Amino acid sequence: MVGAALARSAAGRFEVTGSFFGRPVDHEGAIYWDLRQDIPPVLDRIRPHLIVHTAALSAPARCERQPEDAWHLHSRATGALAQWARRHSAYLLFLSTDLVFDGRKGRYTETDAARPRSVYGRTKREGETACLSTCPSSAFLRPALIYGHSRQGDRGADEQICRTLTDGRSLHLFFDEFRTPLWLEDLVRVLLYFLERRPAGLYHVGGPHRLSRWEFGCLVARSAGLPLDRIHRVSLSTYSGSPPRCADVSLDCVRLKAAIPFALHSPEQVLFHENTR
Ligand SMILES: NC(=O)c1ccc[n+]([C@@H]2O[C@H](COP(=O)([O-])OP(=O)(O)OC[C@H]3O[C@@H](n4cnc5c(N)ncnc54)[C@H](OP(=O)(O)O)[C@@H]3O)[C@@H](O)[C@H]2O)c1
Image (tube, rainbow, N blue to C red):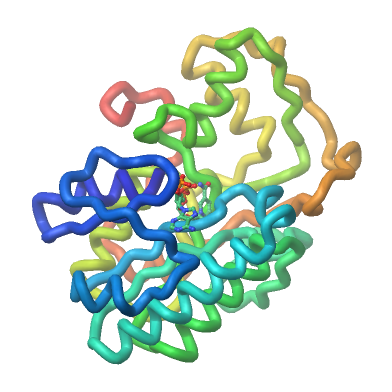
C-alpha cells in the first residue's frame, strides 16, 4: 500500500525503481525482489541514492506463524540495507511500526522505551536498532494505523471496514484499543519531505487524533453512509488470540512536528471532506 502510493507520487520528482514480491505492480520498470535473499547484488545493480524500505509481513498474526520470514524482512534485510547505505552514502528510510510499544501507556513519544509484545513488533525493533547502529544517517519512522485509498482497494484500515459492511457482514470493534490513525497521503507527504531533506533518527508518524477502533469504525461507516447497527462495540478483555493486542499505542509525534512545516489531517477532516477523498 505505502510503497505503491509513494512510487506514484515520487515519480515526477525522482527516478524511481519500485520492487514487488507476490503481487505484480503497475509501476514501470519495477523489479521482482525477494528480500529474504542476498541484498547487496541487487543494490549494486540499481545504485540508489535513496532507499525506502516499506516491505514487510505487515499482519502481526502472520508474523507469529512465519517468524523466520518476519525476521528476514524486518531485521536482517534492514541491517543489510543499512550496511549498503552507509558504504555508498545513500539515505535509508525504514518503516517500522507503533506496535514496538506494549500499549500500556499510550501517547508514546520518541523517547519512550520500546517493549514489543509480538514477533512483528520485536523484529521491527531489531530493524530500528540495525539502522541506528549501522547507518546513523538513516531515518526510521513509526507509522500508526494507516487508512486511505490503496491500489488494491482493500488495504486501508477504512477500506477494510467499508468492505465488511458493504458485504453485509458485522464488525466487532474494541472501544478500549487506541491508535492515532494516519492518512496514507499524509504519510507519503512526510516520506517525500524526508527524501528531500534527509533528516536522521527516529520519528513517530501518527494522525492528530487518538481514537479507539470502535470510534474509528463508526466515523468510517458514517462518512460512507453505511449502517452503524452492524458495528458491535466490544472490550479488549474478550480477546484471547495471538499475538496479544496492545491497548493503547497512540503516538505523540513531538520530533516530527518540529521537523516538518505542515500539519497532518485528522480522520474527521479526511473522511468528511470531498477534496481529500
Ligand atoms: N498498514 C499499516 O497500518 C501500517 C502501520 C504501521 C506500520 N506499517 C509498516 O509500513 C510499511 C508499509 O505498510 P503497507 O501497509 O504498505 O504494507 P503492505 O501493503 O503489506 O506491503 C508490504 C509489501 O511487502 C512485500 N513483501 C512481503 N514479503 C516480501 C519478501 N519476502 N520480499 C520482498 N517483499 C516482500 C509484500 O508483497 P506481496 O504483497 O506481493 O506479498 C507487500 O507488497 C510496512 O513496513 C509496515 O510494517 C504499516
